[in-house]
Length: 227
Length: 335
Image 1 (tube, rainbow over the protein chains, first blue to last red):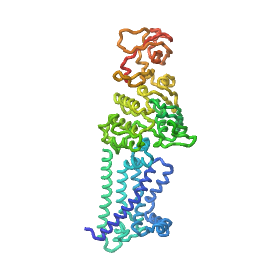
Image 2 (cartoon, rainbow over the protein chains, first blue to last red):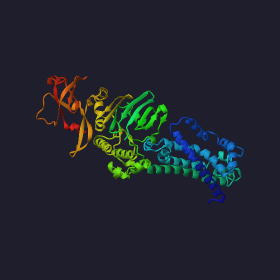
Image 3 (tube, each protein chain N blue to C red):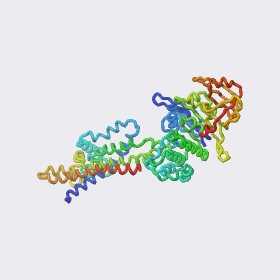
């Protein structure tokens, strides 16, 4: 059903999106929790988090190149200290994707934390639970369904990232060429519309199942949580 | 057992709270005051949930002291709190709610969860999700959870506010039993005089963010500042009572005798259904706004109040220093 090339594209997309989710979920949850609490200066953090939504994706990719490129401050450090190269690699594609889906994760997690009864944290404090303990034993489990739903949405969105990924990681088959990048590539070739259509259907199906999956998951977890 | 000494200030917008009082190590202290007087804010400040000025001490441990910039975080204060809404963790069963406290309690002081469940009569519902519990069950699970947390002092913010009638009285009895068994000092917020009388050995009265009076319950309730806060229909006096359970002494508490429930006689009454007749000497006679008289009668159990009409006062010839008898219907005592 799938040609070897298509299977490779799909697997690249999956691995890029999974890696991106893995990297951006912990900081996104931390950011969301901070934003849901009465913390000073959170407007600044809020703005920063949402930057990738406002900026053109190409610009985000370009900024990443400046920072994480071989001559960028972080990029050079990473290559010298850890021998990690991000530009034009799968890890690079994942980083660009992680930055792009970060706002989606923060937004979903923040709503989840805000809809939790914050007074339960006070009750936990009166039972000798410290701040970290309260976060892991009360806040995180209660916000879990919302966060998970956000993660599924972010995963689906991550499979479709284009601008930032192509700018930072280029479109290398088997390395960084994800579904949307592959669609763009075949469209550049004469007579590629047929193949583009096949890839488009795959992309559409994946995105839709992601969205529906998120809804179902959230519904099911809420029911389990508040039996 | 530790006493709680408080001298704190709190500012919230235009509202100012200044409270200085002591809740003794033995007994139950009731924090009484009308809604909006700052009772809950004061409790939150003692718990460490809101920042405040001044100082608070539990036994010899400082909880906060602005002078040395000390503010012990709530989870290290050794103070337990039971809230108006039980605040059980919705993602856990009743048992796991209690186990939450057990895991965080000092190992050498841990209390057995099943034993606590039997004491609070919640054993049958222990493995249910807390969403399925009734109001009374929820408050008892919250009490058990707080107790398993082995606090040195317990704060209770109107934990029976959501209960009514019989269930409320039953819950108050649970609180009394609990206090007797675990000798845990408590500060209980309420705005009901009957609840206060059933529970209190000590009283702290708060009005508009200020402590207007505090001390032993029967003495503090005799202060004019306290009476001024009461609904006129609740005016009365506290008398100490000894609780008997099948002939055995089962504890002390106060009874609140409402002035409206006391009948006065100028002679010793005969052939009458009232079982409780108190002989005394008429003290102060106060004319109320509606023309009725609030008569103080000094009895062997302490001064009590009776409200009678002006005509009745004249007819009985009541005057300071004259003897009189107070008739109490036994059923009004059964709170």
